[in-house]
Structures are given as structure tokens and as C-alpha cells.
Image (tube, rainbow, N blue to C red; front, top):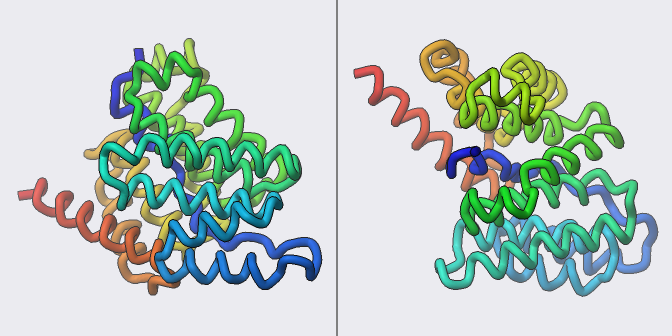
Length: 252
């Protein structure tokens, strides 16, 4: 059975820009939601986005609630917010099955929710398979999506780490080589993105901290070096700094 930490990287936090709505109607409200997101007012972004009733709005709301629930909500409120984020991402997909970002937000929301409810319940709900399916659908829609590649790389890495390479391959089809391939693809398509550099570094360390230490250190340093574009980037920056500090400390 996959251990508790096996769900922690099933929580892709997409920081790629949302696509603009398909017309002028509702353009101002979606811009208001995006501004709130960029400024770190994630609860406001979620309310404004969801109120639009569009795929773009639901997707933005799902991502905002996932961040709000994970980083800022009290423990007794986090699970409900993450469950709502998952539902909003599913609404985004129903509203527009061709919206790549909607599937990425579902990966993000389900991953955070899986972490909140624990591995046993997450496995019972089939989250591992659902998260992989959503990430693969996003990649099918956009083969150059760095976020989808990073998500699939993290999925393979976590399952291999949790179950061991043989069991992971037999029971889940997860492979270290696939994790590496997806990380490299993510870096190829978005080399100057904080999120991609950080997530690929974390994934490599999960696979093998000794073997991939130098590569991960360079990616973490790159993530720290890149300027923060919004409030979420600032959260990622702090995470990268903390992980690099821990990595350096382990060298001593």
C-alpha cells in the first residue's frame, strides 16, 4: 500500500497563466479574479472566479481554493475547502472538456485533498488513478504543458518511492525513467518558471536524494534566482529556500 507521503506530490500547484476567456462578456470579472490571485487574495479570487459560471472561472477558483486551503486555512476548515476546490475543478471540466487548465487544477485540488484526508482514504477513493488520468488528459490536450509533465513526473516519483521500483511498475505502471523523462520535458518547455524548477528538484530528491542531489541543488538555486511574478511565486520561493537550506544542512 502506498505510504502517507506518497500523495504529497500528487498536488501539482499550477502557476502557469490562465487562458483568457473566449469573448468580451465577463472579461472584467475574470481580470478581477486574476488580479486577486496575483495579489494573494485567494479567497476573493475563488469567489469572483466561481461566480462567473465559466470553465475559466471555475478553474481559477479551484486553484485559488487549493492554495487557500493548503497554506492559510485552519486545520478544521482546510479539508472542506479542498473538497470544494476539487468540485470546482470538475465543474470547469464539465463546462469545457477541452480546457487544459481545468484538468491541471483538478490535479492540484485532488492532490491537496488527498493529503488532507490521508493516504488510506485517498487510496479508497481512487485518487492516485484519478490524478494520473487528469494529468494525462492535460498532456493529451497540450503535449507541451510543463505543468502536466511536472505532475506526471511527480506521480511516477512518489509511487516508485513509496512502493519500490518493482511493485510500482507492476501495480501502477510507475517508473523512475518515466519520472525523469517528464521532469526533463517540463524543464525543456518552461525552464524559467519557479514552479517547474522547484517541482522537478523535489521530484528528483524523492527518487534518490544521493544520486540526484547535485542536479536538484542547481534547480532549487535556479528557482530561487528567478523573480517572483505573483503571490503564489513568493510562496514557492520560500519553499525553495527552505528545501535548499535543508539539503545543504544534510551535507554537513
